[in-house]
Amino acid sequence: MSPNPTSPHDLPPPVEDAALDRVLARSPAQCFRHGMVQSLPFLIVLLPFGLLFGVLASDVGLDLAQVLGFSVLVLAGASQFTAVQLLSDQVPALLAVVSALAVNLRMAMYSASLVPWLGKASGRDRAAVAYLLVDQTYALAIQHYEMNPRLSLAQRLAYFYGAAAAMCIPWAISSVVGATVGQAIPDGIALDFAIPITFLAMIAPMLRTLAHKVAALVAVIMALLLAWMPAGTGLLIAAPIGMAAGAAVEAWMERRQKGKAQ
Amino acid sequence: MITLSDSGVWLVILALGAGTFLIRWSFLGALGRYVMPTWVLRLLRYTPVAVLPALVAPLVMWPAATEGQTDPARLVAAIATVAVGMIWKNMLAAILAGAGTLVAMLQFLG
Image (cartoon, rainbow over all chains, first blue to last red; front, side, top):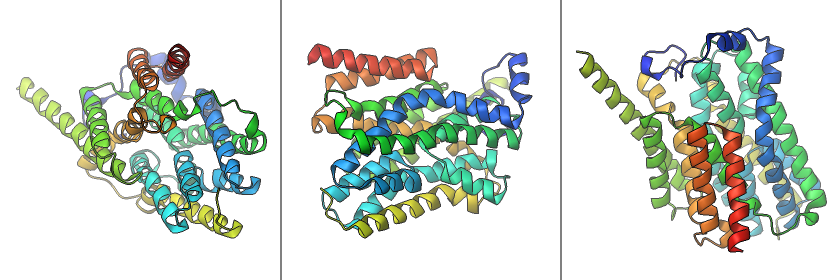
């Protein structure tokens, strides 16, 4: 959703005026804290996921510094797992890097979709946001910006940094803890499913229009049809097709509404 | 086990870190002041609802933990997560519903 709304049916659901004013009146420091607080639910899954990364990575022979290196310098859970998994399967290093990067290509789309909201920030801020742009900070920030389109740039940045601080620092710490105390985690816990559940829980509340639902459904069907492709590549085809389907439905709804008005 | 040398692992970490940063920086960094046409904005609106479900769908249908065999417990947990998330529009409630369903199902089917 762009900050200069051209399609009225696209505006966020009406919020109490008082509540809206309260959000808009926040100082950057308050926005930072607000971002932190709203990130807390993500920790329920981020922490076990970070622990799991530490456990698995140390299990296949990475030392503590390397585990921390992954979580701080790469800072992208799914691709960290991909790289460690492939390296432990003796895949050549270059191929492991390329595959893990393919898993991260979706973030180019996140980067592009934040331009309308943060594109006017300073170069340093845009670089910092880019470094901290993970699925969770993106999902949280974009829904906040869409719900409160009149926030100032400083408020948007502060909210993002608050979310990033609350999620990225615990992410690094938990992976180190996992590498240290890994063996104590019981085998029976189905941690593997933490990621799917988090992502689905993030997305479901966003499926508010027919176009959003169609986009998600088409993307899911395409992803399943293309699951035979090498890791991460099917996604690169399925997601744009889902996006196009959503955009097409939106354009169709708009035309239909105009037709009714005449 | 990883047989790559220590310096080889560090090289992987640095290359992956740098590449990932460039991906994230691409549009925000290089094209920050570029005004995007309406159709691009329209497409981008559907980025999260297309990318994340596409990322998750194969993991739900063919979980690595069951060696790619469709697992009723995980499938039902995923459906419960989406249903609660769509009805109550609350992420935490959806996570709890999904995790609770998974634990209960694994216990029940166990």
